Image (cartoon, rainbow, N blue to C red; front, side, top):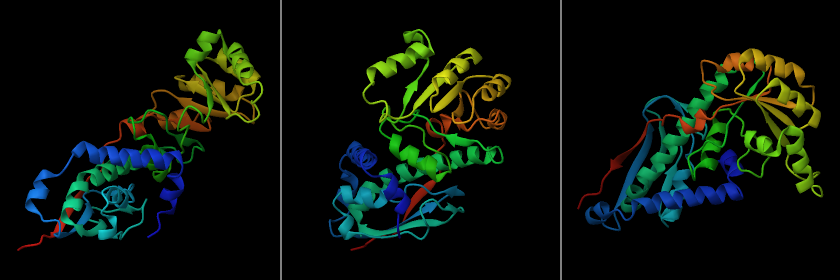
Length: 297
């Protein structure tokens, strides 16, 4: 099976961070003293990972990566009956595994933790995307992610149909309230950016300006950034703010958005709605590993 979308996402820094997270998770568990006592190095298990609820599936390629980190992948046979990103029903087998007992049991919880968490992020993202249907707005994630898991969580957002905002602080020059207040206003903050990067503004990432009021929106429009964010504005103010932004500048609504309010927020006409809870508050999906065959003396 091809994991093309997964492999395309996890290249460069994203892959480095993913592999580091897997290594850390395996290290946190330490040696599996119980399995080492009960199973011999030659014992082989057959196991399957099963969905215990209807769910999107995100993170299947973590299984071979975890086994590879243990040095056991070459001795394992893995089969994936469903595609990464598929929606499955309760009871669906999403992975079959045959390999050294100690390696499968050592990696079991790490593999399940990743699949359960990432599938949960994908599920919640999909609910928000569905709530935006027909509005023309797209769902953005944020940097409100679990430490060390930003790239996996942002990948899961894409599985659920969401769009990634900046993955790190170099992806966008983003003037937030702290920057604006320190500089003395939006014009002054933009002047500071231009002065600091006067020789490289043409090659720098795009600029986004966070605005808390209609007055700040007017100031931001004059600076012609790539995007203007309406931060914690009520729907009426957002509609006025959106009308004040000319074509060519993207708009984003942010702040306290949930499933009950997102449609009203999107009705203001913004291009994007950003929601932190799709990553920081997504409930885990329920998957389990079931052993199909245990060797006997």
